[in-house]
Picture 1: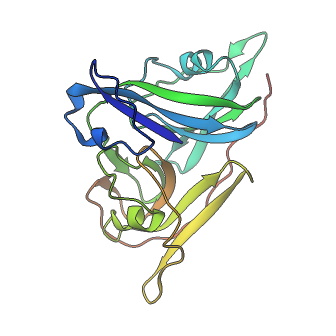
Picture 2 (picture 1 turned 135 degrees about the vertical axis):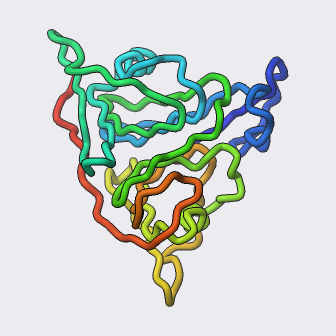
Length: 222
């Protein structure tokens, strides 16, 4: 996943982890790239989207997306909208900066979140599973375990989606042994499913939790 965040009107070529992400939001535009495979892909929207709905997003991505799964933490389940060649999309839902979705793709392509750098996202987390993104101003969270620590005890499992094997990889915390993986790198804009012990607004959560990941829908192809 590649991040490029650029001072307005100054196109500076910088590699994936750009410190400009921590600049004044109004002075930064750019994009974050999410390489997608055929099948399920986890995509976040760190930049202000140039589209308002999941349908607009699919169109912007060349029509490769046939299902968009949105996690509903209040009921702890997925809500999916699907594309049909005759009837179009089964429903409409909006996409906001900082939001995370699963998409089912029929081809290999690169998904982009492009536009101005918005305010840092604030997540209303529920007890249980929540989809969140590494904020663009937290380049210090360089590993999955460091990201888990950022929840100050409210999260002890961080689930990472692996495109290549189409499955989840869980990094767990134990009070005696610490995190089960302290080496796997993450980056700004990366999306994860975490388990929260208590309802809270993040950043600023507290507690301990563990949990199980549900499977999103992949039913339709275009």
